Length: 208
Image (cartoon, rainbow, N blue to C red; front, side, top):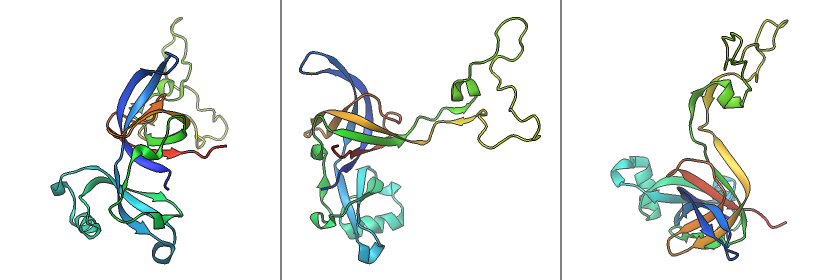
């Protein structure tokens, strides 16, 4: 059985556990994911299943993808992703992967695209302390010296203002608090990367 599912981040809320304690959770609409293709060592050099997630209008799907979905005999989906697995024999095209592969108490890692912050300075981007705000200081939030006094150039990796966010982020060790199979919802303790409505990938971590 695969250990990964695709989902859509809905938002954060709080629930009460059996001890009456408030637990902050992120609600994710996880699945159902439809198997659209099986990949084997003979044809692709590795084993994996391709799954689709999310509703999309057929007029928003290009012709190559339309043919791909028609060959699979499934409705078009907004996202297509691959899940590596050694047991592709357990699945066939058209099967549905639901959130019931997870249980409360499981540890997972969640991958998503972080919120884009645009062009930001070093104080917000790298948490620089900033310069003095008094005594006539005219530079408060600038990076000041680049540290290159003899090389006459800026070294690679120097922390500078620039584009912030909109990168793939993975958070490991999050805990599944509740699974609602009827509504395809997973409640994960804490925050997960990404904005509301964005695609996330949930993968079960091995038990140590």
